[in-house]
Structures are given as C-alpha cells and as structure tokens.
Length: 419
Ligand SMILES: Cc1cc2nc3c(=O)[nH]c(=O)nc-3n(C[C@H](O)[C@H](O)[C@H](O)COP(=O)(O)OP(=O)(O)OC[C@H]3O[C@@H](n4cnc5c(N)ncnc54)[C@H](O)[C@@H]3O)c2cc1C
Picture 1 (tube, helix red, strand yellow):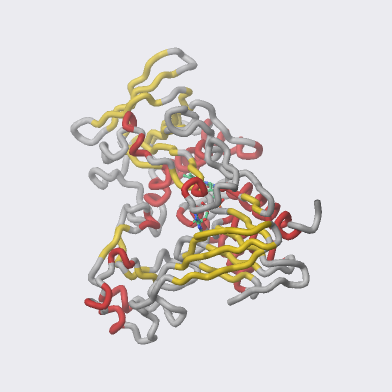
Picture 2 (picture 1 turned 30 degrees about the vertical axis):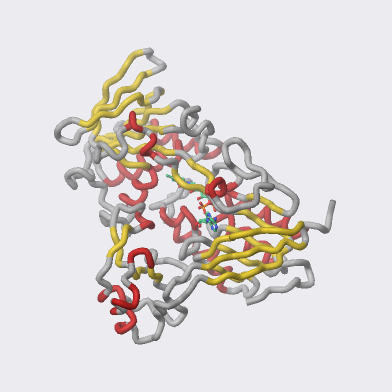
C-alpha cells in the first residue's frame, strides 16, 4: 500500500477516524487525492459509535456512520490503517515525512466473524467500548457493527502461544499470534488532525463522589447503560442493586467551566444531558429527572429540544451547581446544591446521578510535534500544512465535526497551491 501523488496533488494524511476524520478523508479522496487514514482504535467511527442515540434526530449512530462507510467501501483512494498511531513527523507542507506504527491485531482479513475463537478463549478483558462496564474475551469483536468487521486480540490479556485455543478453533487461518508491530513511512502533502476527545477524568471530582458512590456514573457511561448492545441490554438500572431508578439527577458542568478542572465549556454536555433525560422519561414512565446547571446551552434549532423538556411535568431544571454528593446506607444519593435564582440551598435526593463531564482533547497527549500550536485548553490550532478538525480543534457536536472535516479536507487539498 503505497500511495503516490495523483493528478490533483500529493497524498493527504488524516489522523483519527471519527466523524471529522472520516469526513475529511472521504472529501479529500473524492476530490482526487490519495488519503491515508490513521486510526488508533481497532474500528472507525470514534466516540459517536459509543452513543445510544444522537441529537437532534435521536437516531442510532450506526445510521449516520453507515453512510460514511458506504462511501468508504466504494473508493480505492482511502488507505485505512487501524490499530495505528503517528510516531514522528518531519518536513514541510507539500512534503511531510510521517512514521506510522501499527500494533498487531492478531486477526487478518480471512476472518468471517463466525465467533468460534471467542467460544474457546479462556481470558477476559475490560470492554473499552463499554467504558469498562462489562467484559469481553481477549479475542473480541469491538462491537456488532464495527468496521472493519473483523475480530481483534487484546494482547495485554492474551496467553499467546501457550494457549492458542483460538488458532485451533479458527477454520479460516485468520489468527496470527506471532504478528509483530509494523512501521510505515509515508510522504504526504498535508495533514488533517481529527483525533477528537476523551471524557474528563471524573475521579478528580471527589466532591461528586464518582468512584465512591456506585450510583454516580458519567454521561459517557450512561450512553452505554441505555444502549441495547450495552452492559444492561439497554435497561436503565441502578449499578448498586440492578433496580430501575425512580429519580435521576443530571449534574451539568461536572468539572467544566471550573478553573480547577476544565476552564472551557464543552459545548455539547447540556444537550447530551437533555437527550439523556429523554432516555429516562421514555423508558421509565414513573421516573422523574432533575437537572442542575450553570447555564442551559441549546444553540440554534436545539432550543426546541430544551423547550420540550421544560414542558415535561416529570422534569425540573434548577439553576445552580451541585456542591457535593453523598451516599446514604441504601445507596441513595443526597445532592447539595444552591438554587441561584431563588437564593436558597437545596438538599435533593436521587437514585442515580449522571455527571456531565466535559471534553478533553486527545491531541494534548498524542505524540505530535511541539510546533503544532495548542491553545491553553489543549485544543489544536492550525499551522502550515496541518489542519485540525472536529473536537481536536474545539468541543462541538457531530454536525460541527462533519463541517470541520469537510473544511479541513478543502484546505489540505489546496495546501501549497494558493497563498
Ligand atoms: C455524553 C456525550 C453525548 C454526546 N451526544 C451527542 C449527540 O447526541 N449528538 C451530537 O451531535 N454530538 C454528541 N456528542 C458530541 C460528539 O461525541 C462529538 O461531536 C464527536 O465525537 C466529534 O467527532 P470527532 O471525529 O471530532 O472526534 P471523536 O469522535 O473523538 O473521534 C476521534 C477519533 O480519533 C481517534 N484518535 C484519537 N487519538 C488518536 C491518535 N493519536 N492517533 C490516531 N487516532 C486517534 C479516536 O480513536 C477516534 O476514533 C456527545 C458528547 C458527549 C460527551
């Protein structure tokens, strides 16, 4: 797999295969460029494929992602490198030299997804797709609709050749326990950085009892706890006793807009909390939801979504930050907050609390050149020949990520041609 310059110009490197990276890769390839798409995970789609549904339409993420995959399957110009990360970059716009390292996946393209390997695998691992809320075997399909549709081995949890039961069970010679890390050197004209985000570490929010009280979960975990392919089969249940909650508190800005944690607004958490309240109201006809917020941010047409929630008799929205969460003997939660509009302190009880943790840029911890400028928040700015897109650039929703990806592809395509 070596791409050379096409009639329209040098190849483009896209780092990150979420919505923004997929958009950039497809737009650049459809404009005639050869594209290398480097994705760290074993699958494409980024954080969005871990959502249950996505606003504003509330459709499952696989619907939207499938449209991208259909385009991907019909182009030969996108060279996909999953399980891969950029190790080094040198050179200048028009001629960057990039070193990419690819981890062994242990399963080749012969895999038919028959699952015979899983049936015999004796080792388990925390399921990263479910944010560690469940386990898979060491050899696993990342999730049902994963692309590439192929199993992978988590070698950190595999006994290797001393076990090799999967090799014996596979009729298709698809498993290679000896596979080694590979290094590839690419020459590209421009780079799109679409490495997205990760959730803020809720363990740093000790006052909100995450990791101490079982019934305090994060917003990303809640997406999995509601998803049909998640650890509870889509039933909203309290982690402490497996019972459906009667009241769910949504703690907005958990660590966000806070100089001690994340100074920035993560742009999507309010809407994510409103969406998640809808999951509760729709699934549990008796349950109530309560939101505690600093401001309610539902820009543009998303205001309709907020207004529908305001009209809900089973929903309350209180302007005030949650100062503390404590757990009672039965696993119930007591939230201390202030209603800043009425100027009074509140003690609120809930069966489950969902922390709306903010977005931290993945690029801040990636092995990228120090010459790629980052804002104080860690989100990336542009530099000659290097164009950030989506949540690598700033927090935002899927529509913004897709728009950014298209814009970055355009800039990459014209890189070095216009001043
Ligand atoms: C709780 C919650 C709910 C949300 N719900 C919605 C919703 O309903 N609707 C909506 O519009 N938005 C929603 N969002 C926002 C949405 O998740 C983002 O808009 C979207 O993920 C942005 O896509 P992206 O491609 O920029 O980043 P990502 O989805 O983070 O994708 C980045 C990709 O880059 C890869 N990557 C990272 N680092 C590297 C590296 N060093 N090398 C190679 N690859 C790398 C990652 O593995 C990943 O595949 C929600 C956010 C949260 C927190």
